[in-house]
Length: 281
Image (tube, rainbow, N blue to C red; front, side, top):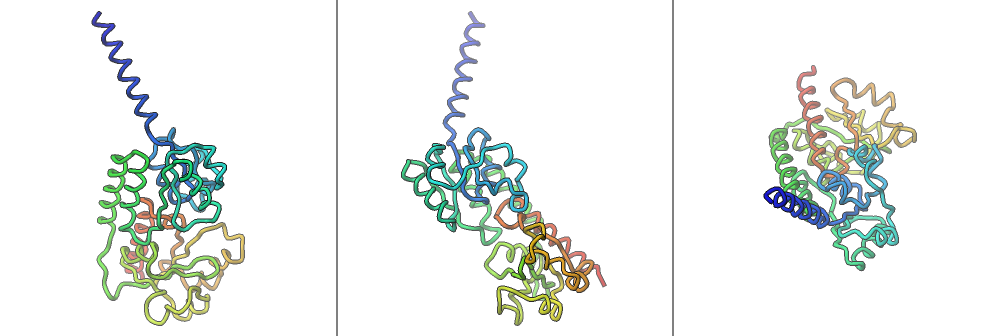
């Protein structure tokens, strides 16, 4: 009789666990940055689809994990057919994604549009936004707290005479204040070359400008394999000669393309680069 009672109790607990698992919202993401937060916070069975970019290793730091979950194309038909409870997108999005998000709202799903992170301080709040929306608040709190602890350990106090660093991307584009990479530079004890002195004039710099008035550190913001002329200019021999050794850092754009815990990996790389500058003659 006692054994039968234990079997009955075990069955009730199992059913309760199954019911709880079923209660977790089904989640779809139409945005690369949201994709990666979902991968870190959601149970795999919750994910009905992520954007195709989630599997692109040039853009996503979690591309390998994304191969184990479905992808979903940005269309109203696909979103409605997937029956998600929660749909994640961005406040700045393509027209097709905007239409899909509206279709999700009309079908009864909760839609969360995340703004781009413009500073490291934005990241814990976005982690919690997603975590609460998908029913993972405890996991979100743990991730946000770990981020805050690591950020405090890595950050360097700012000084007026900090070294300068230029973030140089394909086609000569540079990064200005008010962006996530700019904030990462500041936390690494580096001043953004594009926003100091007389440099804040254009969104693009020629190689001649960089070589004639060089920053202390050239950060090559790599977002592709360098097959196009826009990308291949980052490997121009003149830049290699002008910024050799400790004056040059290759940094994959995926590390700070989105506001993620992994963004702190870019901070760690820049902090090391700053230390190497101090050691160089």
